[in-house]
Length: 124
Image (cartoon, rainbow, N blue to C red; front, side, top):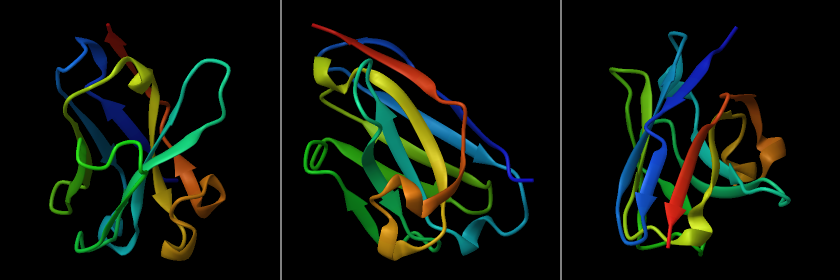
């Protein structure tokens, strides 16, 4: 059973930064793409960013391009999301997930395992 545990969320002022981490269990972490999604109250879960298993390829939602950076450390079974210049509209619960196929990396159905989420709140 794969477990994903997010951390690093919190309250930050607009324009500030946060770094989210997601620690994964299992010995085949580098075989899988990893992604970050978010869900704001009353809204659908939306794709934020994804990274390939080796970390060589990334993909971002247009809304976070240039502000967020996804990275991974396969030796530590951890994926990160560096969030800079945060805006109030970035407020959401952020989830990490383990991908099944790069071709569906921007869709929730492309992920088989999910973490419990971490709250990010950006005050204006």
